[in-house]
Image (tube, rainbow, N blue to C red; front, side, top):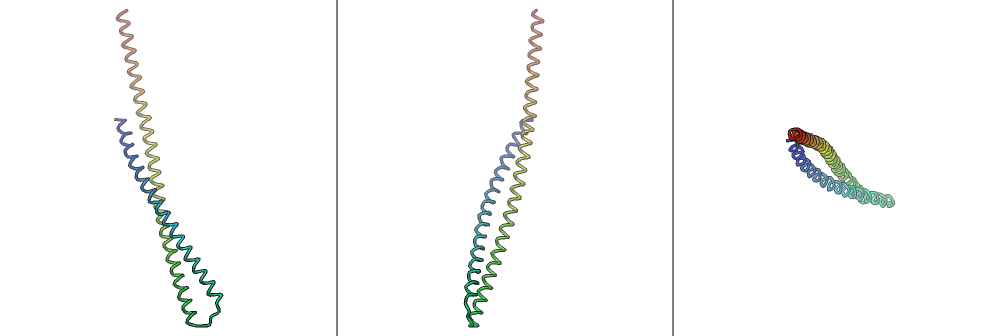
Length: 149
């Protein structure tokens, strides 16, 4: 029966390792998405900053041009803010998945420790049974010698 415990736990361990692999894949995908979203944000901010620099270097007095530039700058800032929010959302999701990964990893470590303990107990039981068998055989051999001698 003791062996059954370690075998059953080995199956549970295998299932947990598969789950950890799935979580690892999700984490990798989300980290890639985070990198892409951060790149988009960086590009938007860079474009906005370049546009601001070019507008500042122009000394236009045309009110309509200034209004269009201001509206465009506001839309660019809104896009940067929205992209920044997207980056934060993806980052939070990555952190949540990372926490799941840590929890699953700890669960696997505990299962491995428990399996090792069960295997040690099982081996001790086997050793005890072998010793008992050796003792019985020695006793039988000694009894045969005494009855023969």
